[in-house]
Length: 114
Image (cartoon, rainbow, N blue to C red; front, side, top):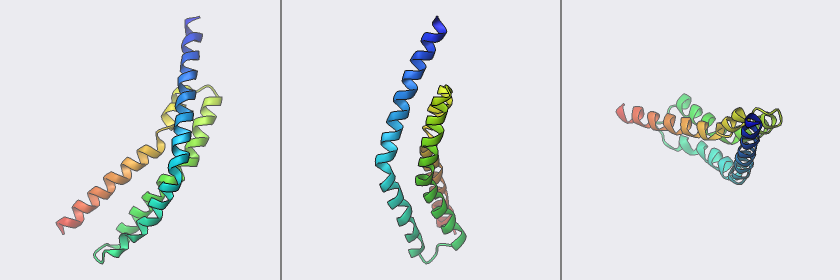
């Protein structure tokens, strides 16, 4: 009986988390695409090496492209009853955003050294 209560509580919390993530990512999706499209302007700097610039652009486009995958993984895991995995998948775009930011900061630091 305690297991079913815990499972029911976990299901409700996961559903709330999934709906919150879905709404937030749907609202942010146009802005994330604009951010990715503007990332092409990184080549306005004449000292930007092409491979480095393309890698930053690639990472910037990974952020909005991860949103549909997040929707799929979150809701498919929720429907299969894998609630912890479903909540974990809500963080995919946020993790990619953090990785992109760290990579951008590190490349700025490296470029300023040379």
